[in-house]
Each structure stands twice: as C-alpha cells, then as structure tokens.
Amino acid sequence: MTSPHILWIDDPAAPGNRVLGGKFGSLAEMTKAGFAVPPGFGITTTAYRHFLEAAGLAERARQVRAQAATADLAAVTALSAEFTAEIEAAPLPADLEQAVRDAYAELERRTGTSLVPVAVRSSGESEDLAGASFAGQYDTYLWVRGADEVLTYLRKCWAGMFGTAVLTYRPDGHEVVAGDHGICVGVQQMVEARSAGVMFTLDPVTGDRSKIVIEGCWGLGEGVVKGDITPSRYTVDKVTFEIVTRALSRQEVQYRFDPTTKVVGLLPVDADRQDAPCLDDSHINELAKLAKRIEQHRGAPQDIEWAVAESGDVHVLQVRPETVWSQRKPEAPILEKKSAVDHVLMRFSGGKLATKAGS
Image 1 (cartoon, helix red, strand yellow):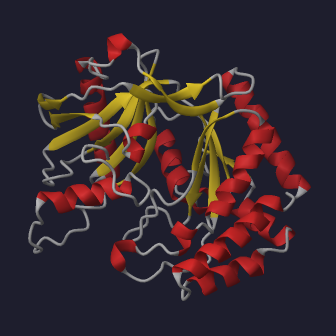
Image 2: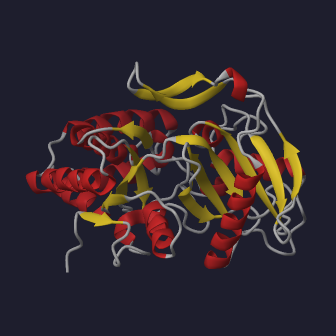
Image 3: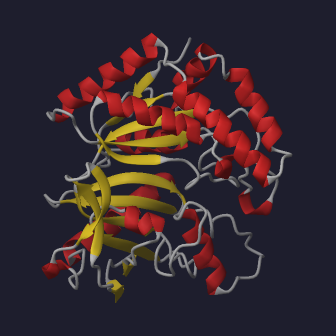
C-alpha cells in the first residue's frame, strides 16, 4: 500500500513510521506517549520521491550523490549549487501541492489560528541513526505563515538534502554517508516562547547519569542551538530534583519574530529581563521531571529541545538519543572534558563549533 503524502504526528500510524523521517517520527512517538508536543504534520518521504519522479530529477539525484562521494570540495560545491537550483525551480505535482494546502488549512482549523505560524523542519530517514546523526546538517525555517510560504520552504528543505554540508558529511571522520535516503518535511505550530533551550538527561561534560543539565535563554531556542547566545545552565539532581548548580548569563538579545521584517531575528531583550534568570525554579523542576519521564519512556539518555510559552506552558520540540556518552565503549578511557563538550557543541551548531557555553 502506498504511503500518503501527508501524515499527522497524532495519527495512530505515525509513531516510528519511516515516512516521517527521524525527527518527526520521534515527535509522533512523544505525542502518542502523551507529552506536550505542538500539533503538526509531515510531508512524507513518499511525497519527496513523488516530486523527484514527477520533475524528472530522481535519476539525477542518485548521480549527484554518487559523484559527490568521490569529488573534491570545490566540485561538490558546484554540483550542489546546480542541483539545488533545479529542485527549487521544479514545479510541484498538482496532487501534492493540494495535499499540502489542505493540511495547512486543517492545522489552521485545529489551532483556531488563521495563517498559523509554523516551523518547517527537515526530517531525514538517515537522521539520528546510530553512528551517523545528521542533526544540524538539515534545514529548519521558523515562523512560516500561509500555505504559499510553506510550499516555498518545502522546496528549500528538499534542496537542503543536496547541500554541500550534507553531501560531504562524514560521521566521526568516517566515509561519506551514502545511500538513497529520503526526507520528510515537518510542518509544526510555532510556540511563541518566553524562554527555550535544550536539556540532557546526563551531564554532557562528565557523562554523570545522576544529573540533568538544562540550558536556556530568553526567546526562541535558536540562540542555544546555533551557539550564538550564551545560555544559562542549570544542573539538577535526577533523584531529588534539587538544583545543584546555576550558571546565569546576562542576555541582551534574543531570537524572536520581528513584525517589521516578518522573519525571525535577533531583537533586544527587555531591560528588566537582561540580568534575570530565563527560568524560575518551578519551571526548572517541571523541565527536569519531564526530562526524566522522557528518558524512562525511551530507556536511554536523551537530549531534548524545549520551550516555555508566554502562558507558562512547557512544550517538547524535539527528542533524540544522546550520542556522545551513549556510544562510548565501557572500556574506553574517559576523554578530557573539552572533547566531550566540543562534541556536544558541534551537534547543536550545524557542524560549526559554537561558543563555549552554547550547545
């Protein structure tokens, strides 16, 4: 049976379904388990392959991957630029375009919001697989409004599958990851975050599994993910939920939707918030308990993206397996702290080393 072009993350068929890719398949699982995940739908890997076939680009896509596996960086860059332009210019099949428009209209209905702002996120089949996490390699676009914009950024996410960074991606210094991997594009309601960030169900520096580490900032979590805002960091005991350490950072700018430019950008933080903690103790406690429940549900250490809305509600934005300490062999010597930190920073900065505190 052919998979649909659209699959909602709250559909009973969604959890673990490969047509949603790694990221959105994980969010479907979290939704089924009852965690507070914003509503959304995936434009499936089947839709992506349907587009390539209809546009006459399927064979060319395979050739591009094969050529990139042995070409030098300059040649890959040129190859990428040429093919991504073809993808962005190619027309969508009429049935697929209508399916996306209908799904966005349904999201407007479900949320009760006309032109509901959404995040458009790439979710690859190869993403977050053991030994080859593509986190940070694929594209995400925030505060997209209207079906026309969704369709524009859908193409950009598909084109991102053939970006230079993806075509040359080598997990842990090994060979280029090859294969005819598909991509789902997730469309998910934005959380108008008061504060946001990431948390780990172990200490990412020492590997201590008795701790939960929360990193956050004012505004959207892009500042923490990209590493260009130094987050505040809280270490919480996983058993007692006592806040063991606090490292607060002054924050003068934040990522927010700019109504003037109509895009997400860096805007000033209100003066009364610049030296104030972005999380109060009740939210730190709520996040730590949430992290522990997710780890218990998954049965292994996790790293989690979260947001606290202006209303105070806590939302789960992304969940993936922790990949630094979990993959380390028990007999391997413990590396110096800098190595562990740098690995974590690389995961959350798109392959480019972030500032020391940003992860």
